[in-house]
Length: 562
Image (cartoon, rainbow, N blue to C red; front, side, top):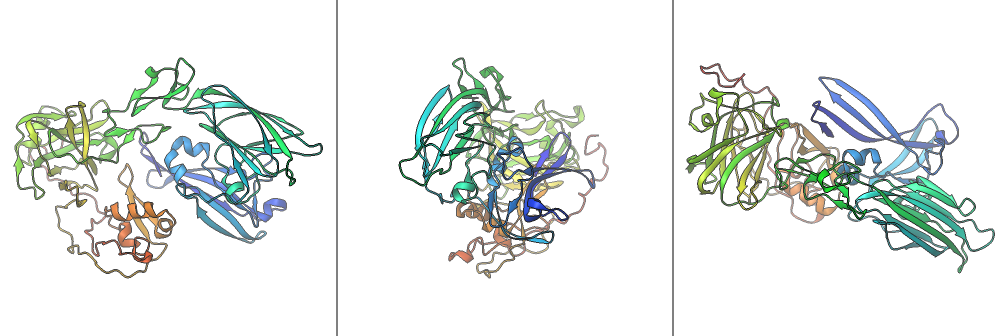
């Protein structure tokens, strides 16, 4: 799911497999694979569109787009998805195998997912040649063994480029073939599928020349075996040159694509370091560039263990607030202990992003009265922040935030770094509510929010769990930028790598009124089914029912600014 912050809509992306009925030919004996997306808006509105994966992508025909019985196809990330969410596109790469087809009736398929960190080994006799660095113009000619698979990787660091390919054969009557891909060709190499699967172009020794423009920063060329006899060779000549620099890179005077400074962003085709713009608030936190080709700076999901600082504040972007333009804080208090008993007086300078006017200034949040309110407003980067620059360094272990109707459901507790003149995340708290929120900064225990209203049952820890789970059970994976729950199934978790499973099971501690964290929902996947001890999970987690937040009674002056 991708949130469009401009229009407050969610884009949900998914892969679909389709078997057509009422057709003949290849279409009736195979499935088509699609990337589909829904734009969700309002109470029930949506918009739908999709694209088709052309299985045999080396031809112009769509009649060979179908995956037939006995074939497997690796669904590589499309340019469309890489432009929108490069990390998620790389993380979710299905492998579709068609086991059986009853034309016009039903199909049996097997679905697995590529483990990027531990991909399947080559199933063919493969010679991988050295990567050709095309950060500047290059020409390479090679003679290769025609009885084996030969793979070439052309890299354009930080940019895209153009390539000219020529192919030849050493023996009369021999027909050599080369296929061109935008990503590593897992289908023919790891799945022993047709070498055309996933390709975008091809050439033969009888039609030996090809011009091709790369996608992102790589091109792959595979020469499958063309002769079983030893000593028979094929020849290939590659000429490549860089074209334009990708997003967040710029072209230097020497014609090389160089990466923008840390947490800076630039447009595709940038030609100067001056084109690189710093993410809001700088220094990597709280905004950062999540990966090399990201289209936008995003809120950082990491924090540091910070013991002392002169400056402490709470911080939230507009899309983490209930209204988007206002945050009403009745009280903000800092404490030096986890129990929120040792109050730190706000001796120093109170700092803020902005306010609604003289009656709603930042001092109202520190006057120990809930009848006055900081009417928080956004700064020029669309961020709320409120805190204190203390006269001397302070240790903060607990924060109390009492919000009115206009509240934030996620915030960062930040500490000022004098050396770097920047603010750093010291803690991230989610699932906040209107009213009082107690935030314990306990790095060793990963605390949860303490609600004002106690839970219906005190949470207890199960030391022994039954090693059973329903693979279709949904667990709370995370909250998206609008505070909505994002879920995954136990089955999808079980198909991830061991390190990923461990991370999700041990570190996902958030709760939702409907969905449990992975450790509670998927005990078998989280440990007890692998010969180890299950991850301890609350049996009765505190529950926040899905009701509208309480409305503050009118007072004079008004609690929340208009």
